[in-house]
Image (cartoon, rainbow, N blue to C red; front, side):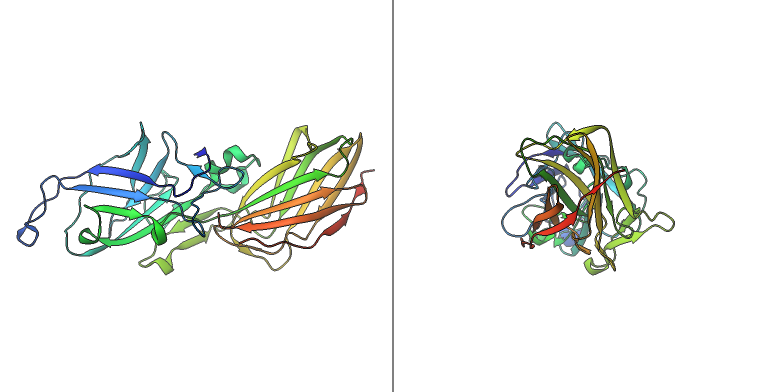
Length: 321
């Protein structure tokens, strides 16, 4: 996915389909056009899928998604080619009278052979960079409509039917206290019960039956970013790490810890103040300030990917012996 701010973003998937006529559908053209329109849901007026610092995204060349026709179990692949979405096989409206359920997901997976078990990206392979968020994101959408309710046969994945994020996203920014200090980060770890385990997604008969299923034996509680070449914590912007995680309501607080050097001396620091709850489709932004006395949580924002500020919290810094 290409990363960019996007307001009211939508994509149009166009498919020419030949529709059979019958006695009850005498108005149907032999070359009826079935079109799909889709956008990504966000609270308020902004559409965003979290692929830049503020959460904006748009699909880019050769992106592919999976699309389920009503009552069909196998997904049809759509690929963005030269600015247009192309289907790998022809599709048709069943009729112009009845209401149908259409489902779709991103990214397309060759391993997905049924709507009841769609493999989701492996979160344990993340490296924490902003540029790869789109590679691990997972979106799902469903639309209920009839031909008569559409604009000339356009199935619209917009508004309440927009694509929605299934994972949670955390952006953790580390800032140093004094501009003259030289702070180098060598490791960062986020821990919480099965935050990064493998999952599949399923579409049920109705929307309230849609959701994730955790794969047995694939639990993963911690994700560590190891920097072979330590990264510098810049004076103004600091250094930001991005974690996509399974939506969770943990029994115990999550834990974030770092290993770093300050002016050539090695230290560790950690906090368990990032909370227990990470909701699907929410973007959590934390700012941690690293002082000589403590690692301070100086800001927390939750957006619809709702903002709230948390009081300043301090965690002792521990020299590495």
